[in-house]
Amino acid sequence: MTATLEKILLVAEDSDEDFVVLQRLMKQFQVQTSVYRCVDGDEVLDFLCQEGEYENSPTVPRPAAILLDLNLPGLDGRELLEQLKQDENFKTIPIIIFTTSSNPEDIEWCYQQGANGYLIKPVNALELRKTIRSFVEYWLESNVFACSTS
Image (cartoon, rainbow, N blue to C red):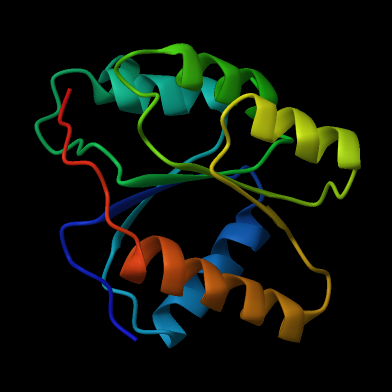
């Protein structure tokens, strides 16, 4: 499996362990997509708006997709999802929820707010591998993205 080089994935994940596992699996799947990580919702907004540590940084690309954990410190994933899907500049970026919550109310709410996908983080390593493989195959290899740079 290989993904297109120009696709950028922004991962909003505060768990170092979860992020390392995600990186290892993507490396095993030979994903060529550039991955950027933010550890909380405020950092995601700074990244997207090129503010804070990302201000005046010519290297900050617009992500083709955001993999979003709901349980982030500070501005959490729910609040971030709501803000991004209401913002004209960012609402077209696909947001895929990647969380431990299997609560039907969370799932329904996220889709009502405009989430483009909802993946539950499996505890089992084999199931996690399958979930990440499916994510990579669809969102990073098969899916066609809007080319908006706003």
